[in-house]
Image 1 (tube, one colour):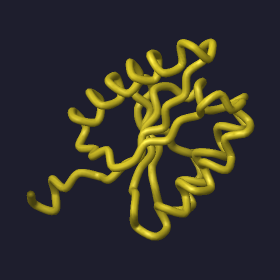
Image 2 (tube, rainbow, N blue to C red):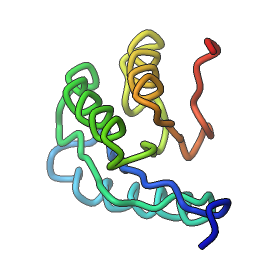
Image 3 (cartoon, one colour):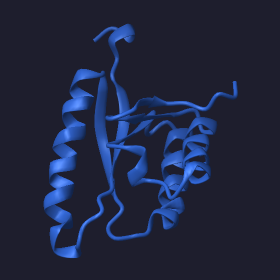
Length: 120
C-alpha cells in the first residue's frame, strides 16, 4: 500500500448507555457500526476500549492512556460512535479531543466526522 493510501492505526472507544445486562449486546452493535465507518474511511482498528459502566467523567484515565499510545506511535486516531457517549459536556469533550490532538492524534466520530479544535 502506498504512503498516500496508508491506513491510520486507530483505537475504537465503545461507550453505551444501557443497563448492565444489555451493555455487551449494545457494544457489539456499536462496534459493527464503527467498523463499517473505519472500512470506508481509511482507518485500521488495532485496539478497542470499553467504558464498561464508568461514568462519562471517569473516562479521563482511558484518554490519558490513548494519548500516551499516540505519542509513542502505537496509535494515530481514536474512533467513537458519537461525542455524547464520551463526554459529560462541551468542556469535557474539548479536554478529551484536545488531549488526543496535543499528542498528535485525531478523533473521529461516526456521526459527526473528524472532531477538531478551532485552535491551530
